[in-house]
Image 1 (tube, helix red, strand yellow):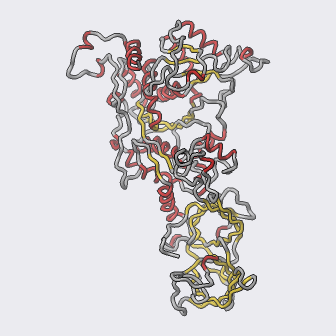
Image 2 (spheres, one colour):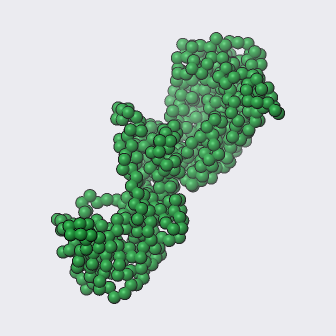
Image 3 (cartoon, rainbow, N blue to C red):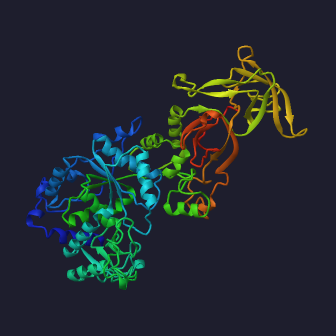
Length: 626
């Protein structure tokens, strides 16, 4: 049935074959072809990413992409009698420049999967001296908010890319409407009155209005525009079969919702009128769908390579069909594998559920894998881009564990985050024989002291980690005990325990009295520990995985749904941690390595009175060290 329908559409669009068409030929020149050229394979070619930067992966011939203007050489591209003249005009306009676009919907925050899309679209253009648009697909006014428009652009720029131009699907609303009328007059679309429930799924009943007269559909479309139908009472549908078998996708629907940008230009009322369909005689209340809008905006912007994830493969046939049905320049759609991470969810609906139920604070909660959350947690944009490069441009859908991303973060922060000392669980230590306090010069990067330093106070009272002292010696333990001295990092002293002070006999240790000797005079200790003196009190937030299982959305792993899989220990807040005074004055999102503890970032919740730090990632751990 589907094949017959496709054949009928081709016949309707191109006319019957002639005897010359049916004659066997060794090779047909593209310009002479009157048939639709179609093959099934049409995807990104996987490249070997070992040791390659993202730009190297995307440059030149690496992906076997078509050259601008040679769209017809791509497998699966549809060629019509007008193709070559349209490509010629396209080349005259672009000068052979590669043009891509990143087209997010402004109804949510970008996540780690979008980082791959941003890197691919902007990166491919940049690597080949082309341009990339940031185009908002703003055709669903009910869910669009200004904060999403702003956040999306911020994240693109945060990752290091500058859009050639910021555009909106709504910029083209008038042209899209005119093309829809043209489509109706060509007989490629019709007005349908089937209800939304009837149109869901793939086995939808045939529309009894499919063959209604063209002029009747044109008049009804104008009535839709003027608000003479209720929502769901009429739609404009395209006469075509999608790649997944879905018949006649909707191109326009009625929505009595004002648009974020265009206001009442495409949804409006006459002066003094209300919001009921009867009152909307002077306004416009129709909006185009993604299936209709996306390919036409690509054509309008002269996109050369329309890069999208594999789930849009089912829309490829409608993409090519619509451009060709309207005799417009047709870009090439290339599909690549989507990037997914385990132990998380990225669905907008599910993140909203996490926020509404109080599991997370907002879209930028550092336990999420939205880009705003990763930035707040302290992930550098370079690390995210490096991660995308390591994952590579793949055909197959990629599911990766978070530790690969965290490894990229450590590599960047190891080179860029200055070292400071902080104590999360303080134990007071009094150095009884220290003559007087002093200021010590501590390198920001101990492995390269030429990169700067900061000063820290060193006095008779210092604080160490509770875990760096054990009252009873254990085999393999190398830090401070009553029998075992330990060195103090950067101080040049070794301390030995003289007295252990407890709240009560047998109770918790609250203070140590120690003596010190210089490193030159003392026997070399088995370990050196960090410490702070005259510190700042701060809040530290330690994050773990938000979910207990790798695939929280998989009902075979989590039968009762993702909300039942929350890790109760995903956030641990230490309200009275101590950090050395050199961090005073640090700005929001500044990053540090707390020596021996991990990498930390200044949270926006910080105030002049109290700083707040998020643990970005732990340090690499040696399982044999205790």
